[in-house]
Image 1 (cartoon, rainbow over the protein chains, first blue to last red):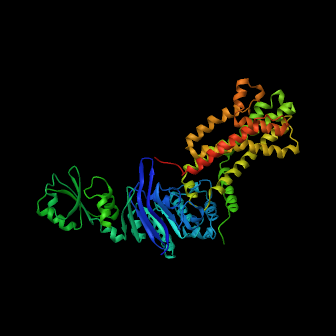
Image 2: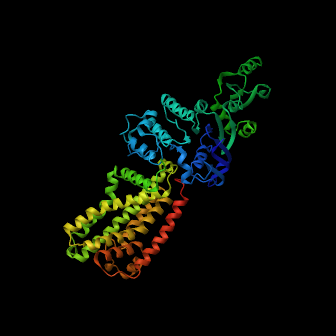
Image 3: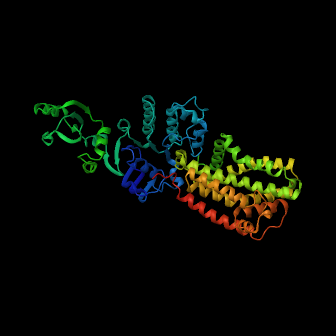
Length: 305
Length: 252
């Protein structure tokens, strides 16, 4: 299978800060890959390396088999500006026409605007659009050149539910038509809804790489919170896989919350304010990657291998 | 269907940059009107405004000043502003090299120089004794371009190496010393000897002398072309260096 984009041991430092630390990643044609990680994990830097915006400090990055900083390599690439950084004085159709002008066979502007629910706004200056409209326009321009690979950096940040689902549909249609997508998000729901493959990045490293189910299985499925004076026999609570504590407030992670609660009751722990929640992958992931947790992200990375 | 050529891309970028800038007319007026106002208030009321040779030289000086403000502000501050915007990063992911974008900038700068020169020339023609024969027009245009070359490169260097605020401060603090020192406001023959000696080393002085020679036929000092070439080489190298190391705005 053709590899559209590749990073090999890519490291990127900004002064003393290491944003990416020896990341290797292949993006085969036709895949819909979700890059997941907390803010500052290095997702955006990785996309910037793939798009040729930045050079790796060490290691190599390839786009369509060559250097992404080489103009010709970017003819089959579509990307989207992060934030809503559109030129405020240009009209909607002007922005699309302008981007379209860089490609051999662009999607006609009216067709593209219709796909992204922007019909009727052609003559509006982008500075006068709502946040959601700007976001949709920014994502729409990624598709105007009929690219083979699209890099979407947090495409739905700031969108309402309806707009988010409309955008997901557009991404799915593109993928069904054979397109390849690398998508970053800190919404796990989004990655779950779209991606076939999930790559978890934290503190500049790949911590997990696999299907949604693979990554889910790395973390306990339930989170139990309770307040108690002192849980002295915490390690005895057999089903607790991980725990953290803030004052008298405990957070316990387990695969089987029913059994854990039963055990808490039968051992007569004087707990109160019990909360049981299904750990969304996002929540579990964030808990895993925050410092001071007993199970470290590094062991998750090992488990993934 | 093939990918657009560099010529097509240059046209595209020139058009859109122009549209973007012209939609905020005050930004254009600010830099382009100042030379005309200077002419109106500082030259027209003076007795020498009715002397063809002196008036022509005064207008030529202000024309160089117009070129310099566009270079320092449109290129210096404008580029720094653009680099701070996410849109600029996005443009660098499009299949377009630096050449169409830079050429677009160059052509836009030229367009705004022309926009600035029109009222200047009109005022000079209507209210002063300044003259420019048709035969000297082409020569003057070439001289203005040559005078602008090091200033253009200086603007690009500032724009690609500094943040917006720093670029604005640097552009403003360079503008007046370069203008006064280069004899763009007061003619150098009014300078004391020490100032004239410093002035000779400035790119604006060389540019001013070249344009004054082109418009009036005055003798060209021997150092002018050497200074202009030297400054163009220096600022040009700096501009290339600044452009190459740029990766958009840096966050630390």
